[in-house]
Amino acid sequence: MTKVLIATEKPFAEKAISQITSVLNVDGFEIEVLERYSSKDELLVAVKHADAMIVRSDIIDKEVFDAAEKLKIVVRAGAGYDNIDLETATKKGVVVMNTPGQNSNAVAELAIGLAIYGIRNMFLGTSGGELRGRHIGLHGYGYVARNVARIARGFGMNPVVFTRYSKSQAVSEGLSLAGSLEELYAMSDVISIHVPARGEHIKSVSYEVLQHLKPNAIIVNTARKEVINEEELMHFMRFRPDVKYLSDIAPDAASEFEKKFKGRFYFTPKKMGAQTAEANINSGVAAAQQIVNFINHGDKTFQVNK
Ligand code: 3PG
Image (cartoon, rainbow, N blue to C red; front, side, top):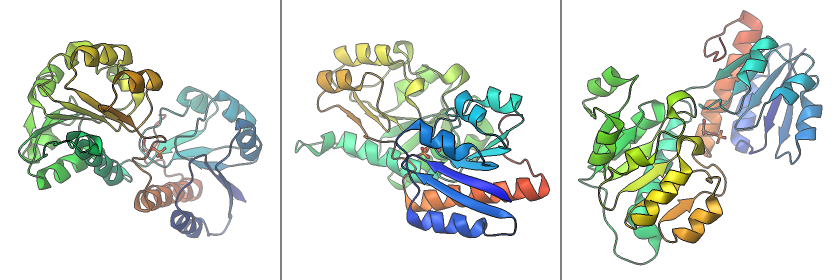
């Protein structure tokens, strides 16, 4: 029997669990669901006899890998896999995959939602602005940013992109490219961040870049807190009272941001970007299918620890 553990501190929608279960309802597979666990010990016990695991932002570190006696594959139902210790996984011969693109529309819709919340002055009753006619700068051009561009165009916005890796994709979609991050920030009324928490992207939203922002700019972060240089953002916002920052994750210094930037700082209490039934179904079902394909056929498509 292949035991598949679904370990999600932030649970999938019920509908998603039933569809994931149907995918895994094939000969030789059994499922255990560990949702809303409140201590790491529960995860360490549950993973002991698991052959495969589906997770979300759950921290899968060395301790978890050490506790797993038979683990062969971990699928992160989502895009970012910065929560998984890839080095340890590789050392232990565990395949790690993600499910790219599956939850990207949900995250993109939230990015636009945050932009509206920001431009309408956090719905506090004062007269705000409109998105139509404004430039939205896409910092990074992966699946989420592509959906943001599509939705933004529907709002009559002008998307501009800065990307090192997906230039031809953006150009083929008729989008304008900024030559540098500084240029992107200088051109945009709304900046929407869509880069992963690794390599050159860590702390890439720095003072150096922020100082180019237009008056009344809105920064929307549905990516990761690690891509922001928090100290420098705080420093910048102190002398630019026109700038707003809305984030789908608490910064490390959340309480300081809240105290200092009332009315122009907002963060979701829990990461909400992919928290829709549709995104849960798409990414959960894809994760389950990838596990079946790997266990039954050795299919390693979407492996991220090669
Ligand atoms: C992702 O990387 O796919 C998103 O940040 C969603 O994360 P979540 O599954 O923890 O909501």
